[in-house]
Amino acid sequence: MIFELRQYRLKPGQRERWVKWMEEKIIPYQVALGVVVVGSFIAEEDPDLYVWIRRFDSEQERARLYAEMYESPTWLNEIKPVNDGMIIREKIQVTRLLATPKSVIR
Image (cartoon, rainbow, N blue to C red; front, side):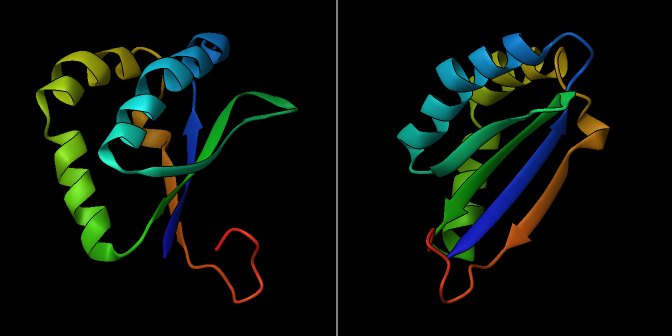
């Protein structure tokens, strides 16, 4: 399994709007395609940080789902334009993780 720890910097004052957008549009959209969203978080002491974790069964599945998600008309026409108003795209950090044998989220 491959995990992605995704850290987003939000534009000032966008946290509540972003969390609502993630929970009502982005996460359901990705889950419907087969992405496993392990968790979604806001930073307790940083109002502009949003973090979420996704899981993929393999690199092949990740590549397939990336193409299906990010090249779709839904993403390009409905989701991406809204995202760009709330996140600082050049500050997105994605860390790929592999679970250790005793990890409870394997």
